[in-house]
Amino acid sequence: MKKIIYFSLIILSVICAACSSGEKALQNGDYYSAVLKSVDRLRSNPDKSKAQQTLLESYPLAVQMSKREIVAILNSPDPLKNTKSITQYQILNRMYNEINRCPAALRLLSNVQSFRAEEDMARQLAAPECYNLGLRELAKRTRNAAKSAYGHFAKANQFVPNFKDVNAKMQEAEYMATLKVIIEHIPVNSAKYSFSAEFFQDQVTQYITNNIRRQFVRFYTPKQAEMEKLEYPDHVIAMRFEDFVVGETHDTDIEKQVISADSVEVGTTKLKDGTSIKVYNKVKAKLHVHKREVISKGLLSLQIEEFENKRIINNKQMGGQYVWFSEWGHFNGDERALTKEELEICKNEPILPPARQDLFVEFTKPIYTQLTNELKRFYNRY
Image (cartoon, rainbow, N blue to C red; front, side, top):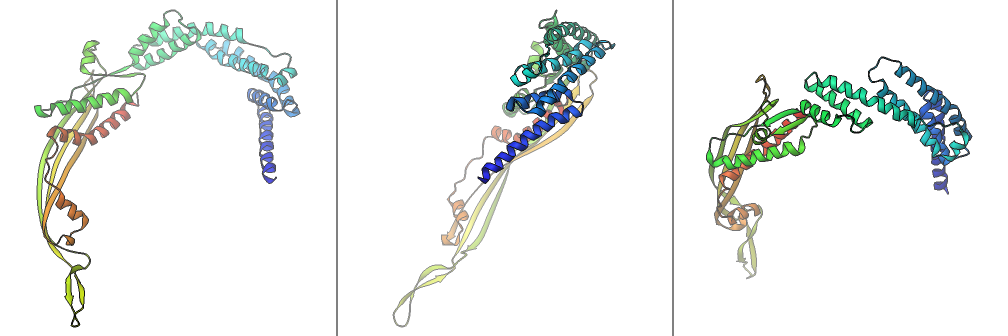
């Protein structure tokens, strides 16, 4: 019973809040919101007198306000006045649609007016506005102006699909606005690591293509740039391994005496009365451990250059290291003196480290993470 009362109170408070929010919007002069909130309230409670009164007062005021806005916009010297008037027509038509979808609201208002024809006419007039403004921006022949032009052409196409040659103009503006970036090949002085360097380059290029997606940024490999006859890119990304070492081996031999942590059974002895008892003591062993570390490390430099003036706009260095590790050993003495880890080491056999090309790939993994994060951070600004 208490739960029913509790939930009833919650529902009642929501209803009161919805109703009061419509009245509050009316009092604050937000007639459009007052219309929408009162209509929504009447859908759930058609006989709610406060919502009815709010709708009756707010709808004529909302229509009047939008009409005044339209007149003011159309009388202004704004080159996009028809474009801006569309927003007001959309407000008027949304109120018309919402009221027509609510029988209780429709019964109250007999003079609900559609402005669909006026909105359609505004769209017809807005398309050439946006198109002409797009042409003016495109004529400036700069990237930022071309971005603006693309937006104007896109709106013109939205208002009147396929208006004039707007699709061709959108393509032209998009190409002009797009930052064209060539990713140069990474040079490697050693032929035996060229395959691994190519793998690294492919991974970086794939990441850039799949994860740095900006409408007005496009990345090219040198081959793609050549195929598309791109002679004047905006940026050139150059990467180079300034220094790297692969397979630097360090061997360490450790010899030590180990003693069991606890006493263990070491034999038996007889007492004077002939009774045999177990003898406990700590045991020892001499442990020989051979450790081998194979270190591979390198430093990659990243430079992003503006092609036109050869200005360096990003210059970073990133380091990476990979240590391959193996150990094996043997012992003389009582194996119970060894820990579990020491016994496992003694079971190991010497193994060969990975191939040098694989070691190259391993030390470039942390470099890859740093590099891709930096490129994403840098080009997310465009």
